[in-house]
Image (cartoon, rainbow, N blue to C red; front, side, top):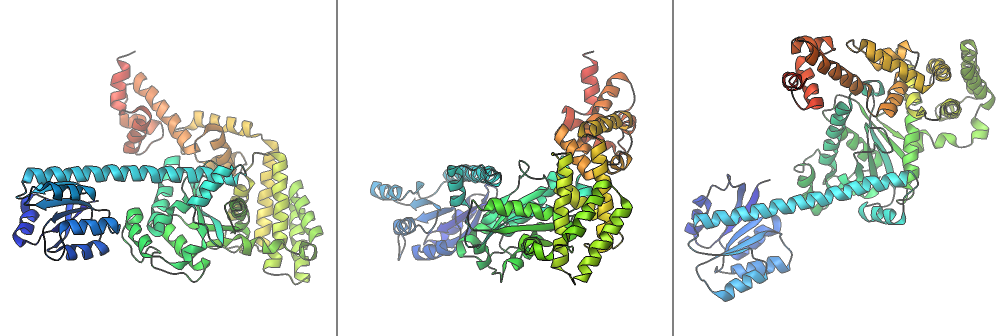
Length: 558
């Protein structure tokens, strides 16, 4: 950002001379204004951001020293001051230094002296900016780490105090998952591709939130999925902005505009979340949804808000498709008065049919459950309540088989694929499709241990790495949910399947470079790359040199 300069002198010729004495733009400066009196300069500083002021010492109405005194004592600006004077009076200089004046320059000002001062101020500003950024980054890192401890129920008193100080919580507060909503596509991406999309979302949020970006948690990988960003909403965000926040908008996300929430007041939380969701997904080729947890009154209760937002992930697949899901609307209300509204016998019977992988019994169980709900004239939330009850039982079934299973992700994925061909979520057909798909999933979970599955997949890579291998195709071949396969693969190898496959291909290419005289283009095709430029880029990432240089370097060592 250019250094903003104000020139103040009652002699017009001197002002004009200063403007042309050096190439301000080349030196990284912009002259944002000129003034011929101290009073004019004072009024300008009250309403404009200025980094550096060159000011004459003797002027009508208000001297340069009086101007500096008023700015300093009134804390009106953080600008650095340079006094210009035709008098080498020690008393003037001492007074100027008392008010932290940066330099005392005698007229006529020499070009070399002016350049030296400007460059010194630029250097100081850059150092100050770097230090400020380091402090901001440190605070954000601590916020993310300490919130992770809160969500896991392991936060210390010191950590809680830090969060209470830096998170501006007030009234009603909510943890919100801002998440990309295509699990099947995301599991096929490399970590780099996912990271790029997350960076785009975070950049969009910076522009929208300004200094409240501190309420976002960009890296939740320690305790959550890699493609989500956490956000802590607080009621004060509904009230619009004051002047200070508006000034800070540029520092965090560009100039204030209609795309930010600065200066805008929101009628309620839903209106704010709608604007937040729109901002997060701007120019992103993937849908974004918001999962809003239960209300939290303070830092410690954010753990419950967070866990309830995670619960939403499992059950949103059975709700009407929305852009924003609320725990308190979609889940919590549905868990009340269960003794009266739950068709427990019919729901338990359907769960047993899923457990036994009995397709006929599943169909009958779905029909019986819906018939009983229709008989009791249940609809809307009452119907959802019964499905929610059944889903809790199904989650427990899978956890009994494999404790490491992240069932909320698997259930969302299966729910999505079971509602194809326009089938309404939560309908009889949707529930039947889900139950049969989930029953098959449980069957395969019993038959294959994670270790056995991964051994099969590793062998597939070794034998067919040059082919178009995808998690979806491998999941179909080995009768396992591809989303679950992606999860256990990442847990085992610490990277996505696509990254693992790329690494194996690059290793095979490196071996061929040393053992054959084939062209780089031919080797790229043989190991599975149709785009030679992409192959070269991945090779450089792995070996820090091009394939050609790699061949020359390591052949000479053999």
